[in-house]
Image (cartoon, rainbow, N blue to C red; front, side, top):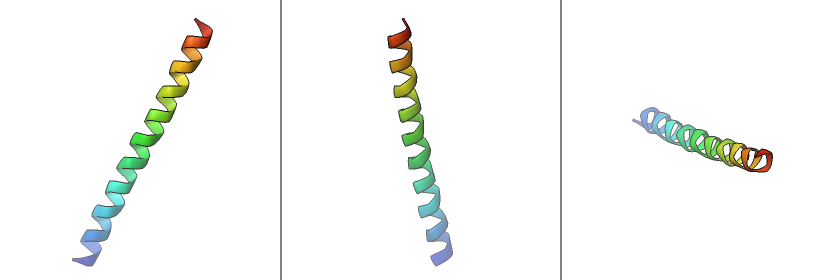
Length: 37
């Protein structure tokens, strides 16, 4: 049970990291596009 909980927590943290990274990349791309336009 403990290992299962750990795996679920790790998966959730990885999801949040991925979403956070995508948001940052999206913001940078938007800024670059706005500056280049």
